[in-house]
Length: 247
Image (tube, rainbow, N blue to C red; front, top):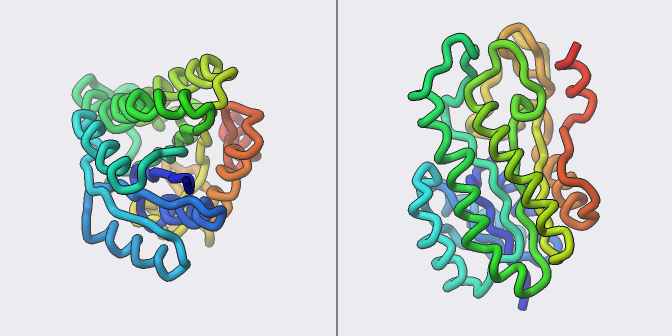
């Protein structure tokens, strides 16, 4: 049976690019996000490219919805072979650590930690049974490189990163791969990529630091490479930014 990728947090940036990249390899595509209208538009775009896709609306800030959406995907496609997880909510920003409180963290934990863990638990048994599968987690640079004034999502994503590392090691002999890509850039064509007017061309800025704007097709290509090679648990993209942020 043809393989299926489920893209959680599907949007106009990385989500549709991942769908197209895996779709070119014959994957059918399940698109999951909150807004039905946006998902339907993405399904139509993929159909124009000859890629079979279907929309599954769900609120990823509610881990309790995971079981139902996974069941719906299986009912439509029969299986899930790859999960791509990378939702970015509108208005997501950073908070200095000196101002961060428990309420702010509690609001971030479901989307960036609890829901991806629930998805893994929902899909892992079938992947292990087949001896093949993958969970691909998109993260922000602050999960890997803590920096002043860039707290908030970072600590929660770092917890998910810790979990992902353990998951990767535990699955080493099963044929199932878990990997994460930390994005140290703004993503072109993304609805939620904030571009600051005084930043340089092809850059986005925050707190005086400029980050490049990258093409989501290039990120999707990196994910395909990680999926096929399965020789690392984590990459940072663009690679040079890790050193730049540590200076």
